[in-house]
Image (spheres, rainbow over the protein chains, first blue to last red):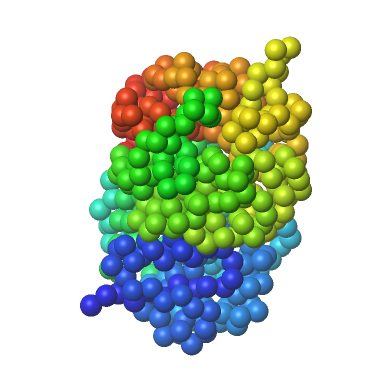
Length: 213
Length: 253
């Protein structure tokens, strides 16, 4: 029996690669902006590229905020990717302070360009960075089950998440002298700052783990 | 910094993967699909598709190739050649591209850079620059695969592109392209110190030493490689291993 994955289409960005990556992992994908489909989902994926304020506006205008919050509270597996991860948080200061879905406590902040000593940290952070296990966190039983140590994944972002609780942080990565939150977990709600659908075999492994939750 | 990216570059003419010298004198190498799959399996960090005749004939045959590749290649795909408007960008992204590279259209109408970044995000807007050395020093930007002069100074042009919202630069040395004699390191150095954008260096790789110099001395964030991979002079794994051995930070597989 194929796993049924509901991919939220809220008019931002390109869902093709996300959809194809889940299909390559054996899932059946439903792309939808219908709140009823989201309420009925077995596995929910919130993708996204672009600005936080645009993303939240599109979710709000389609009446998707409450159904997504309800899905997160219900304990069914939810995965936010890139902007989708960021929108799970309380708020973001991209452009101006904007409230998010408020599922995971914490903020979304700009990656600081000032790297000290007159050095400039480039943004966006583009490219492959290694996922690091924060101390005290175990990947077994999560979407990172059975990954190699410090696997590299593909990132493209200028803002990053700062969870209020350190235990929400499932993975970090290093970028020019600072640690960036690379993934979060709160029960069955997951967020990846990187793009699993663009991270080759490592990414497909993570997607397979997600649909096995 | 992020890991240095190793990016196979596939120049396309019609349905074929081709390779030239100085971006001209083209030879058919094979089926781009086959090569893209090989590079994905070998651990490429990204792929670049460049339709090298699209801007000459005002058409773009690349969409189908991109669509088929995106089906089962799960790494970032940059696509260039013949993109003139934000609608062209939208179509290319819908076909499965993650970023688009623009050159001719950006030179003709620089605001296109801003329009693309505003609509799709700067991460998706790669400005492609074909640079040719000037006898008096410096470089001039060319379009149409190094055939047409623009009169633009490369360094002034990349600064302007950054101001307008480009997310990344693809810098190809027309002089070195296809020669296997090494990259134009001076060009890379001049560009990477003029802008704060990630820079992909392209044109001239013949040996590992060239790769190492592009990163170490040229300061590029990624290296685009065609000939060396197409003709299996080295595998992606070999370039990766040798770069690690030389102390460069590349992705470990």
